[in-house]
Amino acid sequence: MGAAEKYEEMSVECYLASELTSPIKHEYVNGAIYNMAGGTNAHHRIASNILGSLHGPLRGKPCKPFNSDTKIRVRSAFSTRFYYPDVTVVCKPNPLTDTFQDDPIIIVEVVSPGTRRIDEGEKKDAYLSVPSLAVYLLVEQAAANVRVHRRTDIGFVQEEYNGLECRVPLPEIQAELALMDIYEDVPVAARMKILPFASIGQNEE
Image (cartoon, rainbow, N blue to C red; front, side, top):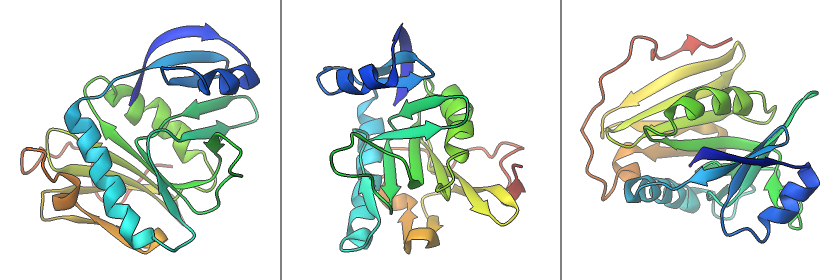
């Protein structure tokens, strides 16, 4: 999902209360709220496939997958943000009475032309600042391609998985994602042209 239209400014408390009854989801960035743009059927199918692929391996374990109705709060000394990732895995969940999670270990965004700039820019920078986050996945819609930003001892590094035969290892939660499963029932190009910056093991810090 992507932020579309700036709506108005409000406090965190008012934002959280209004989201409980709003028919439209909004993301929150430092007092400004943004209407969420709708996604294509392909977008929703890919996100659902990822959620389904994670449900079995994580069943009965502490880490749980969440869908795009789950907000993630990103806090720093100077800002507070709330985003709705397409898929999230959380191992240390907030209380059931909360309407958001603070400690995601994995975040997935399904990239579309309308969301690419924010998914690869603002959201990536915000998500990678979350201390608990181990993996951020950017999943393409038109081609079988997943880019992974993974936390290591030297900071986040980027990996790329390109082609339906690939599998994305997620040892952080003792699972993996097969691209064949991610793109089930979604016609896509078998591969995506590799961009020059998208090299496996690239240090991002």
